[in-house]
Amino acid sequence: MRRSTTYLLTLMLVIALSLEPLLVGVRYSGASPDNVEYDGTSNLIQLLRMWGYNTYVIKGWDFLARPNVEGSCNVLMIISPEKPYYSYELNVIEDLTFRGTHVIIADEGVFSNAVLNALKSHVRISNTRVYVGSEETFEAVVEIGGVRHSIYFAYASALNVTGGGVKVLSEVSGFKIAAEENLSKSKLLVIGDGSVFTNAALVTPSSINPYVRFLNSILTYLCGDKPPTVIVDGSKYGLEAEPLSKLITSGDLSYLIASLINPLRLRLVVEDAFLTYAFISFLIVLLFFPYIYYRVIADALPRHKVKYSIVEELSVFLKFPHILARELSDVCVSEAPEEIKEVCRGGRKLLSEDSVKWLIDLVAK
Image 1 (spheres, rainbow, N blue to C red):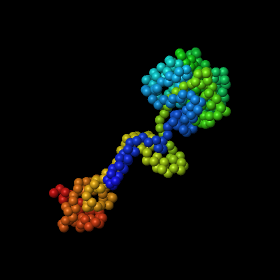
Image 2 (cartoon, helix red, strand yellow):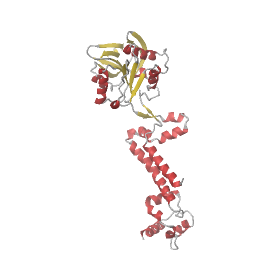
Image 3 (spheres, rainbow, N blue to C red):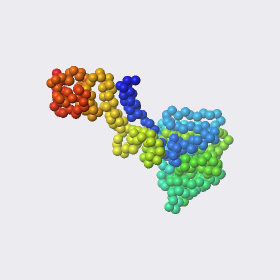
Image 4 (cartoon, rainbow, N blue to C red):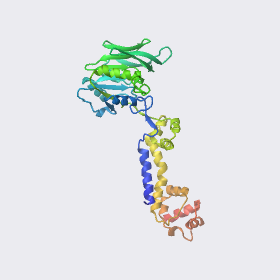
């Protein structure tokens, strides 16, 4: 393979890498089913599938594959979304409930309120932190279908309940933190804390885990003897850069280097500085392009071209690229400056201003 081909392929690789959103050094944020960290819900998906339930992770509501499993019980789970819902997404969710899909919302934020509003629920998440004494982490009892579950909540939000038809499932220090409401053809459960379904809670699938029993009790209450088909919303989470400290302590040098030069991670790191992904990609291409591109041209030219140092190659290429096309016989003549003659004899010489002017005049003839 000619060197020019190698350089060209290298250039293409650099450009491709700068434009490809590689998931190196980044992770999904929050309660995403793709997040394997403590605050993600990847364990939830594994647990549901381990139980043999049909489990779907929705990444886009516009092309939702609507489950229609004969004799199944459909359950939609929305856990601490980090992005707002659009009207067409709310229409799809509303349509699911009209066809009998139960809804579980576990959220301490306010983005789920748009769903509650679309479902005409009398429950809203207040985004007001619940304290027991001075503690944000506390133990509370939640009653599901007559079964009482004692679990810990972390950074829970109080629920606002207006109107009748809402059953409060848990209340602590005067704050409602879990409620149930009947929709037209299904049930709605609202819990003011998404952490009860995260990896930190479902760290083990054992039945002695109170959060595992809590989840199983909810699905049994909603579906009875019918096998649940669980739809988990995974569309409302973004990406975030993995901390540098974690990359360093990983012990994987190649992963560390790949993470540090990943333009997607760089964009996430400097997002607040108004640098866009496209701009960072442009900088990376700009850094590599001149030298690699020149090497392709130089390698394709006849072998008796004048040789320069790397610094000289770059400066000549950037300022006077047409000089490279001159034959040796045009340059190495008796009236050439001594610096030019030295280069012609195979030496390396930083050209003076007079020598460069002599070359420009020669090209201009």
